[in-house]
Image (cartoon, rainbow, N blue to C red):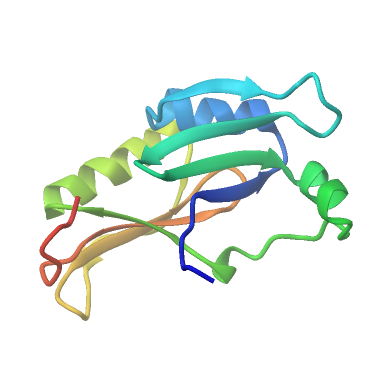
Length: 140
């Protein structure tokens, strides 16, 4: 298998609220909700970078599509990393997330590995890390 990820799908409880958070709050560009003409088809796609999209899809639709029971999410199962080019950009991204309605889990701080990072959760509990890593050549 060629290690290529093209879509990261986040299960959400309220698709319209998730759309408002990501589009209106964080400023992510999207066409909005598409696929509403299909049962369990309503979804939001957000272009992150060339070849990679973030999808917001109702948890009930994921459960229906996979045949798995919907469960309670655990925010420590994974994190989404947003790496930036400076400490100031970390602070700005964290402030934007807070103003959009995110829960700040861990404010931005100097890390044990020499960087600067903080964590927030979106309204559905998905955990995002905003980080500046001085050891990476390309941070943004």
